Amino acid sequence: MKKFFLALMMLAPVAAFAQKFGHINSQEVMQAMPEATQMRTEMEALQKQYEADEKAMIDEYQKKVEAFQKDEATMPDNMKQRKVQEIQEMEQKITQARQDNAQALQKAYTDKLTPIQTKVMDAIKAVGNAGGYVYIMETNSIPFINTTLSTDVTAQVKAKLGIK
Image (cartoon, rainbow, N blue to C red; front, top):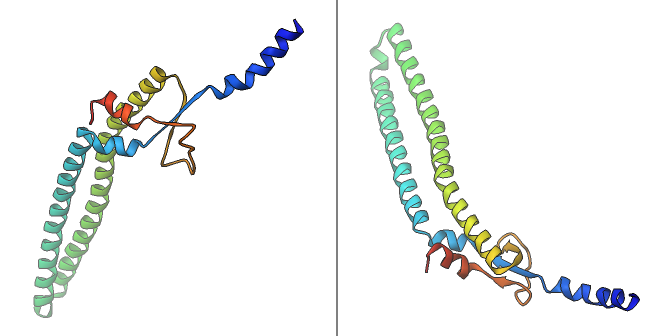
């Protein structure tokens, strides 16, 4: 019995080293996905739309300011006050529109990115389970990975997702 226990203790360290570790560059995988390309195209279009809307507001604002500056000397005081108030309200609308657009753009990005990330994570889990890996670590978040003791599973995850 003592010999059996001793033999078991001698083999325990060997079993610990038999564990499989993997690493992946998930950014590379995501960039290769057609969904990510489509997301980038949609986000660029949305950003251009917001920029065009903002430019139209700024152009209108500049026209009002120029008209005000041109006619300011001949305007009665009550009309000057109304024009100044209109210009200030336009400034506030532009500022608010910028903030709203930035928030909407961030929300759209998050809404479009989340399903892509989920799909990649599911593929990583499937490759990890199928390959018997203990851990699959992100190469971009770890300062050092010994590639002789860890397997790069990026190609396997791409294959699981149907990406070349």
